[in-house]
Figure (cartoon, rainbow, N blue to C red):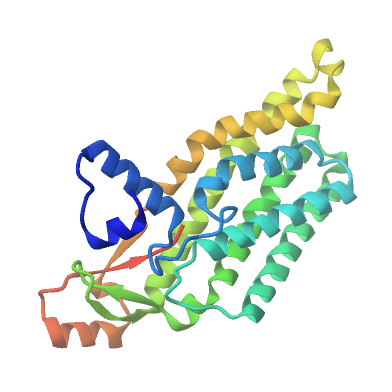
Length: 275
């Protein structure tokens, strides 16, 4: 089904309900819910498994030397910045300067965390050093996502009633949505970056693994992929993309505005939290 047909609200003759749901799934994965524009391929959440498994696998493999840590953390934050920008709430525009500041800040945070912990864990048990990439990724997510979507926090995001009628802009709604996105992203990465190092540390003691050290990187990439196949949909489903918030929890001025216009008819507001 092409997008033109879908926008017209008609269904081609002979289309089954299963085909209709499949077409909607394809459309939702490729087009932004706010603008209707087609999202770039690499930034789509559907690219998280192939993109994330390659980058995360090599971060877990090449964690011993500072140059390798710097390179792979830079690659990861560049990828994350693109994903965060693509899946932002597009109703709140962001300038190129703000994108640049967000990218530099998040990358610097990841590098400082990774390099600092890498040096600190030289005398720590080997497993602790293997967990450094996750610490760097988690800390960078806490910076990258809010920075990339700072305009939403500064100016608020559009909130509507359950029928989609715009009620105003809320900074508190933006903070709630972005916080949920940060939690989802860290949850998405956690199992692979915490459990896989334990597995690798144990299996690398076997002689057959010691004979194929050149395959350790590809093996970790594939194993990360297995984790992400389950964790990407699980983490994205932790919180609904169309988030809601009680009117009583909004800013006083917005709450008063809604109450004066609608009284008790509107109890909750709705907004796109992004992914």
